[in-house]
Length: 169
Image 1 (tube, rainbow, N blue to C red):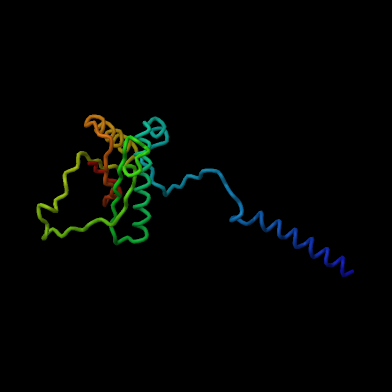
Image 2: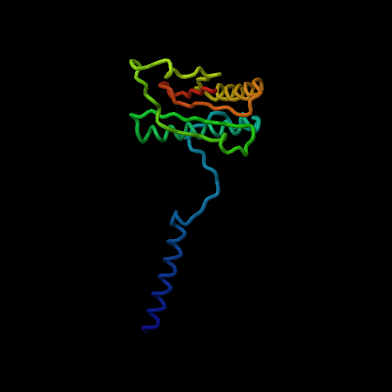
């Protein structure tokens, strides 16, 4: 009788263990891509597919920078943040294919001198929709080609109207 009870207990524990493992979300691996509606995307899927390789990398960096800025702003709404993107035509140039994110400087207007003046950007875009984002990104590549530049940097910020400002140098 004792052997029967031990076997029954062991079988019950094994069955419970197997069912608990299949229900545990931590043990289940999913390989599907779920789109998050809260994630910023600067272009449509069709625009991304027709973009050049350089434009795709720039799109990826802009999307990553804006999403990082949004998360930081959620965690600390009183603080303003800025992202600086550098992109090079050579994808292996690690120092020129990066995103830097930091706290935006609040300059005191009373103490501003000529040395503190920000250099004028070579171009800028105020992106509020998908179509304007793609046209801005393609303008950056055209600018690089026209000026025969291999790399460019861009400052990415969120504006008060929840749009994205891109200033490239």
